Image (tube, rainbow, N blue to C red; front, top):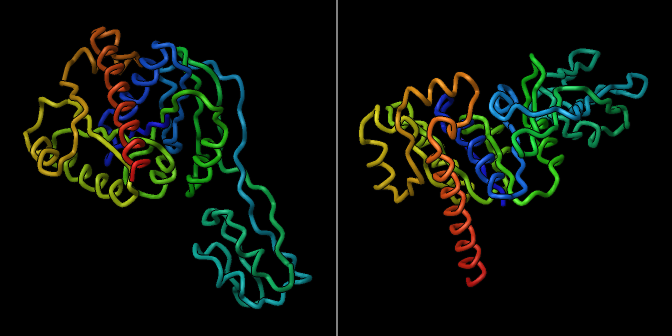
Length: 290
């Protein structure tokens, strides 16, 4: 069971939902892993307070040109969609920050003049926190390409009963890398004009990917009804609402679970998990009967 928690914009409470859901499921006796895929700004550890047991470097292959073989034919430059390698005059320049490590340049080189050397772009921390297996990806400062870190992170997780993916905000490549292959996506939004605009973008992305999803509205009582009306009009299920509560804001600032504010939240997150399980099972049954 793989559940992603995403949002069209930052600051909607995505990590709050992801961490609380992971702990609530773990307290049901399930084996749960939480993956912080927001590798540019990971903050799940603030809430899960894990004991880190292992750290792993994430590397990508960087092309290195052997000028004794290179004929400056330009095949490598033509093959690179990201313009990470270019023939400039009588030399070949490599731009590490643009390189995605795909290996295309070395594959097309007719003189076999390009070797690949590993370049560290980030790290992964592994541990346990609040009964949850914890994995965090972290992109090094100054790096521009985050999907390789997320990809490495997803490969490292064992095979627990449930995996919660805390995706980065937005609808770009890092988000798609994080949520791809998951069974269900929870979109966390807020009832504001910006929140609704970015929710629409996120919904468009998920429809394009063909992933099932539902919406949680955070700070549900501070905005207007347009988010509810949009979900109703588009036949999008609202999985739950979290009202604005000063106690929640205070607990968040201390890095605490919502359960400490009101034990009812734990029951709510357990109910959320149970309803998602039913939806996924029904979808699989429907698919198998086609």
